[in-house]
Image (cartoon, rainbow, N blue to C red; front, side, top):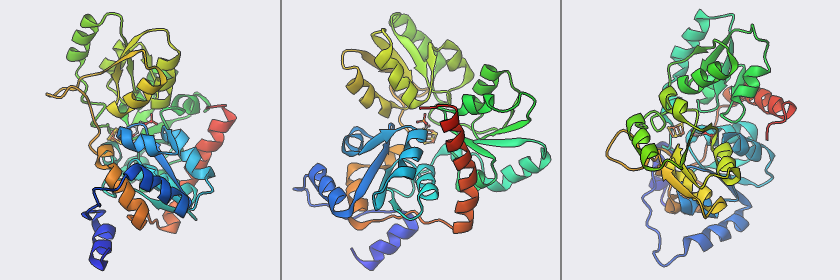
Length: 333
Ligand code: 13P
Ligand code: SF4
């Protein structure tokens, strides 16, 4: 790789290096894992090939825990930027690389730290709980981080009269408010993938498949959640389809999860919930920036690497540690 490539990678996370087409990337990635003592952590929304080479596939809580405990020298994070950043925050002596530095998150982008700190200043008596889908800058302004697996339990563990700001996802926040009877102050952010589901098309699908259960991620809008038979994080949805006796499910979350659902329950039918556009399924454009080719290149060249300012890392770590401790105390799997 030329100096220019390295510079481009560092600045733009851009890979335009040609890969020998005769290479079996699955084999090459396995070789690189051993050679470099690397671990591949992948989110359920990654494309199937990436999930198949991963050492661990999980939801945001599982991935954070795995990143914290790994003894590998290099963490290859197949997910989006805030996830790789969380891995670095928790395990700073490891090299953390990700296939595409531009893999961001619309939800995280909907909450800029400069605006959020003003919002926080206006409500000084509130505790700040932030969903892990946010930047390190927002984490540093938060008291406790949560994920979709533990948000409800964490809120419930606090005194009923505790004033709370919940950021950045208004849909997850509203869902937790409803479940717990709280009145948390919500930041007005949302995920572009979960907001785009069409209630009208889902209702029509339910009519065509009366036997199918509708299952949804809590980042979906309230109208979709109201129609759902089950609401949960990605790992909870996966567990549900494996355990539940229904044979068919309409799945209102990002389509990547279907790969593991089919593996866990090969005889069941999974129908992606349709979005409000011409597509039949719903992919996260950020998650899907990662490809097997970019994963291979990032392992080979150990770039792009996630680098963090140490002061920010330490500030962002406190609320994540609090989440991990609370999750342990509350027995969250
Ligand atoms: P979980 O996998 O933690 O449910 O989060 C979903 C998500 O939107 C990740 O970006
Ligand atoms: Fe962000 Fe939504 Fe994509 Fe998850 S699915 S990474 S919340 S944009």
